[in-house]
Image (cartoon, rainbow, N blue to C red; front, side, top):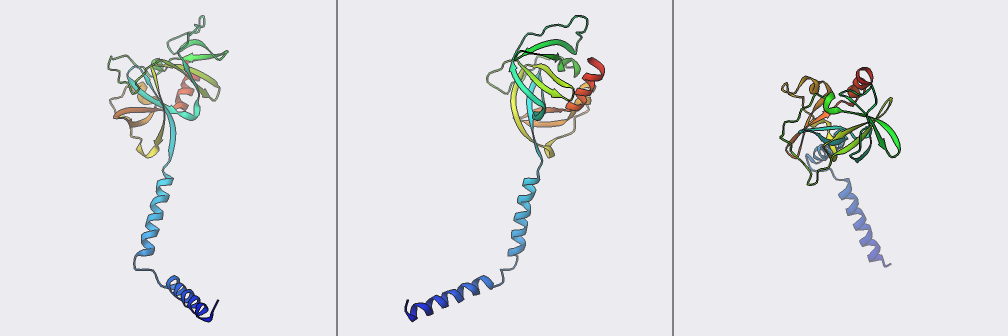
Length: 197
C-alpha cells in the first residue's frame, strides 16, 4: 500500500467516525423508541388456542389445551340406572371406555333449525377433553378446528343468552362473521363432578 492509499484510508476512517459520532436528527430516537414499544405491545397480546365446535345451532369453543382427541362419531352405551340427560353413558375411544356427557343438556340448548355451518364438510364428532378427575367425551354436530383467540377480543355475553348458557360462558368472540361462545371448562368440570356424576 502506498502512502497515498494510507492517507485515503485514514481520511475515510475519520469521515466514518464523524458520521457515527454525530447527533441523530431531532425526533429520531423517540420515533424508534415508539416503534419498538409498539412491536413489544403486539407481542404482549395474549392469545390462546381454542377448539371451535357446534352444538345444534350454537357455535362454542373450549381451550385447546384440555382437548385430548377428536374422533369420528361413536355409539354411546347406556349405563343402567346411571344414565340421565347429562350423563349419556360410555363411549369406546381407542379401546378405552370414557364417560360421555351431553353438553347440549348441560347448557340447556335446543335445536332451532337455523344451523350455520363454517365447513364445507359437516360430520358429527366425538370430542375428548381432559378434566382434573379424568377424561370426558361429548358429541358435537361439527368440529371446525383450532383458532388462535386474542383474549382482548373477548366480549361479555349478552343478557339475551339463556341462564344456563351464560353461567358456563366466559365471553363471546367473532369468527367468520359468526358469534362464538367461549366456555368456562373449569365450571363445566365442577358441575359435572358435583351434580351429574
